Length: 492
Image (cartoon, rainbow, N blue to C red; front, side, top):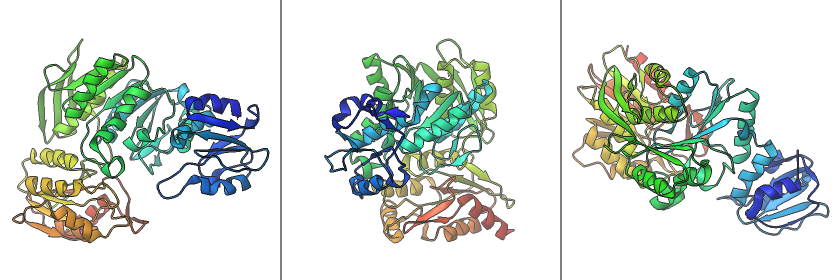
């Protein structure tokens, strides 16, 4: 429990004005009026669809003793008010105070980028476990708080949910927190002033432009992890194989606040990837670090996974994990669920399920599968509704260029007409490309499995680990992995 003064001090420059007794005790805080309890602070956040100020009467009815908002509100006598310049930013700081700053009691490591965040988080967790530490992990697939994993509902939770999860990890005696940090979370300052002790940048490609509007805004959001959240002199591992990573690295070097460490195949990389070998049995490469050059072996396939593994290994090295421990952990690293996850097919073809939902990710996965020398690659994919529309045609072009057979289907259409999404995808597919259009994802998966022959590879892309399909606002049970298994069984 904290006083109103504690909250005001945390808000700092965000606080424009306040009214009330700054020594009153605030029992808790929430941004959902339904969660408010007597003596709590309610954050009235303006949302994309509704203004949180609309729910102030409900919060007051629940017993709120303080209201935080971006505009002056009329409240009953005895209720404190805080006027702020940015309610999103304020919520991040308020949530920290309400939870008792749990992130200060473990080491927070942030991972950001368009693709590869989840794989890097799983790899780093395995390395830290091998080093005898007890890492928690919050990300796209699951919230692992060093107890029973909780299915994730978003990559980076909202501030109050995030702080509650961190508090649970602290109670479970976690030593570290591996945090996948989305661009939305960074733009909305969900992390508050949480101390970040190390960070990893994977890459930046076209996505989320429905939210950020411009690519420069998207880049600026990702950059915040390193310029605003990362502690002074903390390691910032940057993949400079990505052009935007090279830019970020140069900017961080010039700023001289954190410790940027470049990783890549380029000659000037501080952690250089050399002598790469990839094949059916996985990948191997030498990671030439400033003081040593360990040879790393992993069952993961593809150049993109070499970059993921190099990034995770470099951050572990920068944090003091011995390289023999890193080497041992890498040998058993299987990556994340739904990331090039193989499903056994007794008929002699291979099926992989992957989360690839951007053109860059789809290209990386298809190129990785081509290295397996299949007779043909059949790809099943779609694009999410109510999300960045600019990538749809690009994904169609990538599929047509790198696969032998394309089946276009629904992903999570959400509130959009699935046929409209398929039209957008097909606008990037040349007319001569052999393709099938099936809006029903189950039918599309079954069509690909039915057509596959011995020596072929089938890729089902876009949803990966997800166990639902969102249609017209409803999340219906649906698992690509289970659908693939059922289709294979029906062929037997």
